[in-house]
Length: 350
Image 1 (cartoon, rainbow, N blue to C red):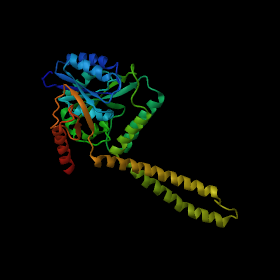
Image 2: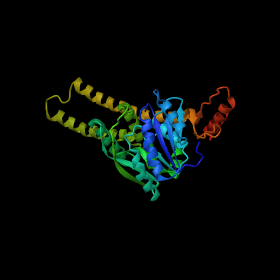
Image 3: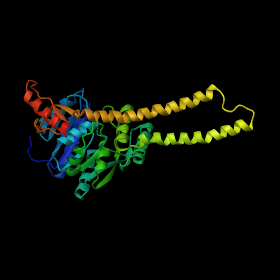
Image 4: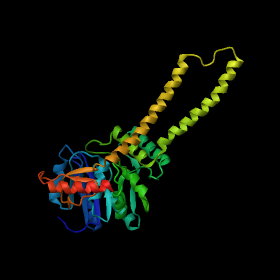
C-alpha cells in the first residue's frame, strides 16, 4: 500500500454499480494525477448484491490508492458517505457518487476554489439531463421548502457532490445521528462555502437507487433533522380552527334568529367536520411519530454501520470511530469484540 499521506480523499459509496466502477476509476485517475498531489479513492461497498465488490477488488490489486470498506449489509447512501469520511486521511475530502452522473472532471474546479481559501465547495446542478418532469419538480420543491422551514441555508439544487476541508470533515464526523442528511450537516457547521455549476448527466449504466420512497425518506430526514416547523404546524392550524369556531358561533345564532329556515342541520355536516378534524389529528400524530422514532433511534445508541472487511484501509479495531462495529474474520477472537463493546459502553455512559 502507498504509505504517502494523501492530500485528497475521494469517497464514493457503491451499491450495485457493476459496470461503472472501472470507468469511474479511470476518470478519477486522469483528474487526480493531473493535480500532482497524493490522493486515495475510498470505495464503500454498501451491501452490493452484484459483482461490484469483485470489481473493487480488481481495482485495489491494480492500484493501492484504491481502498475498500465493505459493510456487513446495506446501511444506506448517507451512512456509506459517513464511513468514507470516518476513514479518510486527506486534507480535503471529495464526495462523489459512483454512477458517473456527477462528472469527476469538476473536481479540478473544486480544488481551485479550495486553494483560494474556501472550506466547502459544493456542486450546483445548473441542468439535470435525463430526469423526468416529476423528479425535477419534486427536487425543486424539496430544496425550496427545506430552505423555508429549516434554520439553515442549504444551497439550492445541490447534492452530496462536494469538496470539504479537513476541518469541516472533523466537525461533521462529530455528529453521529442515525437519520443523516449530509448536505444539511455540512451547511450547519458553517465555514466559508461556495459553489460551482455543472450539468448533471443521465445515468448510462444501471438504475437509480433513489426511488420515490427513498427520496421521501431523505426529505423527512432533512426536514425533521433541522426544523421544528412540522411540530409547530399543529399549533397554527389549531389556532385557525379555534378562530373559525368563535366566528361561526355568532353567525349561526344570528341566522337562526333571523330566519325560519334550519341552518347547518343534519348528519352530513357533522360527519364532514369530524372527518376533517380527524384527518388533521392523524396528520399531527404522524409528524409527532416521526420525531419520536428518531429520538428512539438515538437512545438505542446502535452503531451507524457494521464493517465486514477492509482492503487497504488502516483499521485498528481497538480504536474505531464512535459507534462503529467491526466484524473480525475470526469470530472466535473475543478480545476484539470486548474492546469494541467496552468503548461503546463507555460512550453510552458519558
